[in-house]
Length: 282
Image 1: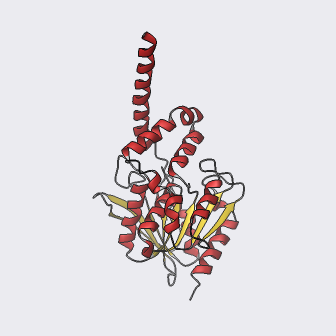
Image 2 (image 1 turned 60 degrees about the horizontal axis):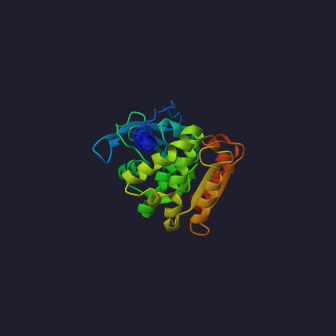
Image 3 (image 1 turned 90 degrees about the vertical axis):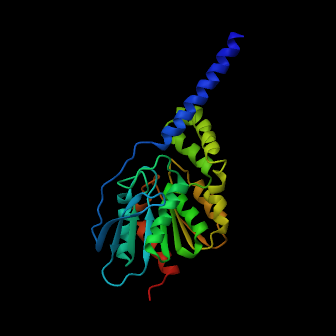
């Protein structure tokens, strides 16, 4: 009988511990970087967020006539500065670039439980502010959010760029947690993800990029590091195969991890070739 009480007590402690961990993974320390745009004319401003808060935002205008607007969304724990290097490439191509920090990131308004749908809301707030169709670029969680946005607002997206995106939300979270800490990933992460399923009313599957992809009918460039430790390369293949036939291209950056694909010399050429095929200069 005592053994049964010990088992029941241990299970209750495990449930409570994983419930606390579910809260903590939403509050992971942020890792903002510092990188200010050094081209064109940039405006530093704040725009309204969906919940009444605000988002910090840069808009950088190129020299001469703009080819259009590119909105760039960073990943989990980062900020708008993280996208400056990528935006610079589009700036050199003659595009206006817009970079924002999601809520609870950078100097944007705090928000207690950020996730991909909340990231998507912030992108949509930016699109409302821009008020014209754009090229949309997302990295990691920002890429998953970009898929949600494009699925909901196809008329606002001309081209879609997905860097280091996972295919399935649940599998992506488990892979991410195992990568950060193997013990946590094996013993606690499955229950943490279960609590997320409960909190989001079993909605994790409904926001999986691979499940939303079949309804996305815009040209998509998938960018993935060959040695991505957070979301292995098979995520890119699965995501590509989930999109309508002929709408997706895949650029694999050799010998790169989750965040360094944009540092390869082939990366700017892949971006420019994709853009020029679908948006030729007048």
